[in-house]
Structures are given as C-alpha cells and as structure tokens.
Amino acid sequence: DSGVTQTPKHLITATGQRVTLRCSPRSGDLSVYWYQQSLDQGLQFLIQYYNGEERAKGNILERFSAQQFPDLHSELNLSSLELGDSALYFCASSVESMTDTQYFGPGTRLTVL
Amino acid sequence: QQPVQSPQAVILREGEDAVINCSSSKALYSVHWYRQKHGEAPVFLMILLKGGEQKGHEKISASFNEKKQQSSLYLTASQLSYSGTYFCGTEFGGSARQLTFGSGTQLTVLP
Image 1: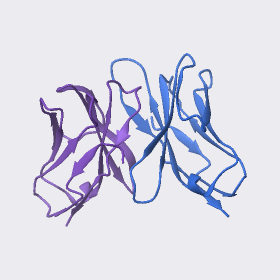
Image 2 (image 1 turned 135 degrees about the vertical axis):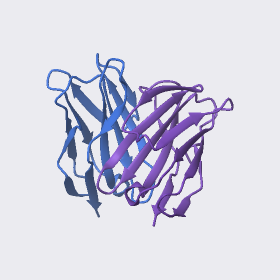
Image 3 (image 1 turned 90 degrees about the vertical axis):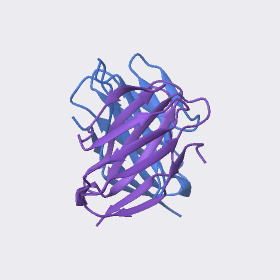
Image 4 (image 1 turned 60 degrees about the horizontal axis):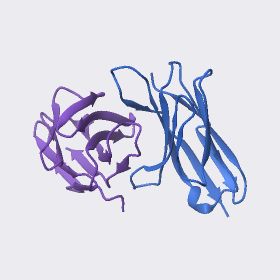
C-alpha cells in the first residue's frame, strides 16, 4: 500500500461524457502527478501539481484538466470522452519535486463505450 | 523523445542476472526506474541524477552514463518476485520538466 488513494477503481461511461477522477496523496506529500497508461501508448505523464499550483505539463489533451485543492487532494477532469481515452489513469505523489520518489496509487480504469 | 529500452523482453532462471538498458537522444537530467506487475501500479526502484546522485533501494543497482545519455539497471541473483515490466522514465532539464517513459522491458523469472 503506497498511501496514495484513488477513486473510483473502475469507471464505465459513454462517448461524449465527462468524468472526474479523484486522488489523495500520501500524508506530507505536496506534489501530485497524473499519468495515463494505455496499451498502445504506454505510460504517459499528463500533469504535475505542487501545493495547489500547476508545475509541469506533459501530453495532456485540451479536453482534460486537473486541479489540486487546499487539502492537497487532486482531481482529473476528462470531458468529451472518446473511445481512445479508455485507459488506466494513475495518480502519484511525492514530497516536492520530480526527482523525489513518486508513490503511485492503484489507478482508475476508465472504459469509454 | 521517448527513451529506448532494451531488451523488450527477457526470460531468466532464478539466480541469473539481467541488465536492462535505457537510452535517450537528448541530454538527461535524471533517469527513473519503476517495476510494474500485471494489474498493479508502478513501484519505484531508483532515481539517478545528473552529477552522480542516486536514490533507491539498497538491493537494486543502476548506472547513469551522462556522456552516452544511457542508464542501465542491474538485476543480480534474480528472484521470482523480480518478474514484471520495468520502465525507465527520463527527465530533461530546463523549464519543461516532465517524465517521459520508455515502452518497458518485460522480465520473466522462472523457477
């Protein structure tokens, strides 16, 4: 158990819909990272938040957005969903920076039908 | 600029050694290594930083050749629990900090 929690574990939805994935970091960690893992694209970094502020951005689509709240939990919002968005979405947390150990949550499996 | 991992897959017997390589065409700031078992989240193994600093588990060893922009992960006296997919993530310096992961190396350890 990494100490990072993600909800929900599974999500099944239809194309065009919008979903929100939630992540609570380990106690004491200020940075939260979001990753997408799909069979054809592998593990991709989406975005990093540090203490409420966006710090680094990866291959995140414009249809996707994230935020980190004052209690440090984070949400990833995915809108206008397409079949290709079906993937495992991982959240990870670290104390501060990209060069600190990242602890991954169990992931949310999103299926878009 | 996805790093290139090699080999793509390797099968070992318990007790044998393996090396997994990760190469980049761009100058690296750090290299991260993770292991992922099927259906589970990636688990941190090691971070190697430009300049020689390393952070990681005592039983795992790795190298970072800054001139060649290459990192290698050394798995010695492998155990059944080492089976999984190993990913390297590379971080480039500058303002655009992000981790870019390789496609993974599938390691299978047989009894």
